[in-house]
View 1: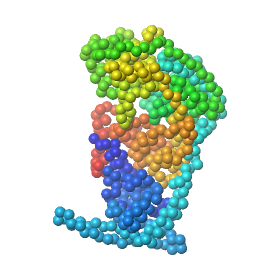
View 2: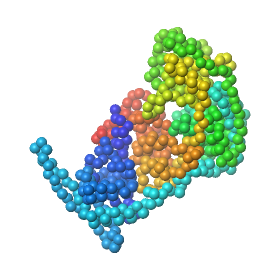
View 3: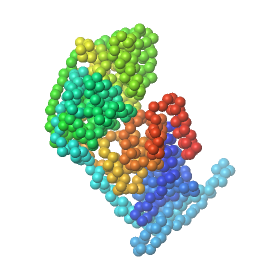
View 4: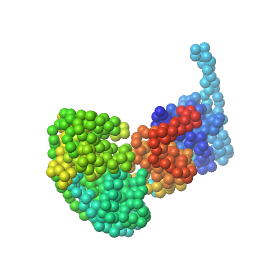
Length: 596
């Protein structure tokens, strides 16, 4: 199996093979390199490469920051260029006296003998006068590109993101903040307001929760539709919409009531998805906005609402039933009806399920993030409904996002999880969210929390006594118009460089906002470089929440983009054989086309 690095490198090669070398003003500056410079193990001369094209006989490299080119030449012993560079060419250079000149080089050949084999090493030498000319020309190019190289473009000013939604700013919204611990009825009261409205939208943190609200609205006789990243059900004429927060329409739709659930995820605890909650809060066009969450972002939400010109109301809730620590479990034989065992690894979840069903009379329902939506809904129904025999739930941390599950006791199988880079301990917020799901109101008088060993038990106990830290910054991500403006201003930039340009040069209010990690965005951008899609379409693709280091996900994103560019039907539901076929096709293209 290819690594993500090899996959990305191969597609960078594909892009380089067809991208024309741009011109800066009326000059073209290029470093001609040997093929060893752009092997799959080392694509970049530096992090400043902007454009590359690979003709059959030689390779051209255009540098975004021309100072690197000057460094390559002048710092190589005053004219001796390392043997990975064959020649430096400057076409159409202008002297200060107006005469035209080009750089010619003197080649020195050194012969060495190693193991009776003769090897010829060629080095290029430049005279002091030639290097002087090069310095002058690079200074001119730097001045030409001063707005890009030294100064941020004017449209990268993001100090006032509330101005991105002028239609919403014309409406003085009434924002009602429902805050309190889990199992306190926050979302219930917000949804009651939504049901009474003529029209409205519910923004969910999970697809499963969006489905739950969609079905609940239907049971109440309310015409509604569902919109997630994978499904769209219902008529467009429906009065109510239940959607994942990323799908919230902040530009065209108008609502009487909007509900934004788990608003604390707009902060650092929301990771790379936090921008969607910030966007919904700033942009949803609703007369009345109900936001639900804990108290950690209360001050932040208040500050944003004031800048938007909206009014704020606060409704504090207390937990409906007490939460207590139970004794440590020594074995899964001690499992009882209504228990939920929480793990953070899919393999562990299946092993836990098998062990419980092997050693007890219980059958286990299973819920985790990557389980297909229909399967997740079925598993939740099996656990919630009495008499099915599925009296125990094995789940990931997905239960912490407000799913209505009839849980009596939450048992932590582990207190560490993989964050995409390393294994880390659960945060106080995560423990409070997950443990708080124990003790379903009106079904149990108390909720209980336990662990599988004493060390984890003490860790969970300490965190349950604490309050999660306040979050003072919201995740902010620009609308696609920013990327389009950069592309218009600097048309020679690749799409991945447009994203890097924005990341490096945007200006935000760091006291209130932060920019998400753009590493995954750049991964996706690089595999989309050579696909004939608009900047807007490519930027929408970068919003896909990809699993870290997933060659399969990158392959699917690329195939999806190619089909979209060809106006072909994209099939989202595939079986294992289709998955294998897609991956074999991707790897074959990489091996044959790019010799990876």
